[in-house]
Length: 105
Image (cartoon, rainbow, N blue to C red; front, side):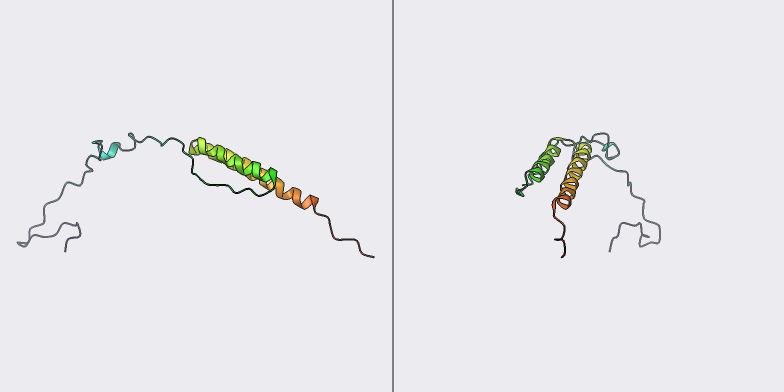
């Protein structure tokens, strides 16, 4: 059984050390330089469908999420926070619009 660790040869002498330096990657760049050769992918839509809710303000906020499809990942946070603030505001407005319990006799 071989587990990748050096073992003693059958005559008792230690096995030869193997060269474990990283080799070139598929493009021929040395593995240590892989980070230098990295390029971020261009923004691309995720293709997530948004179903209408029937509330125009909420639907508009959900459509705003599509703006993130055209931004690099570090730009998503601003869009998500904006939508989150808007949705919280819409939920709060529902509490303000609901009538309270009917007054008693």
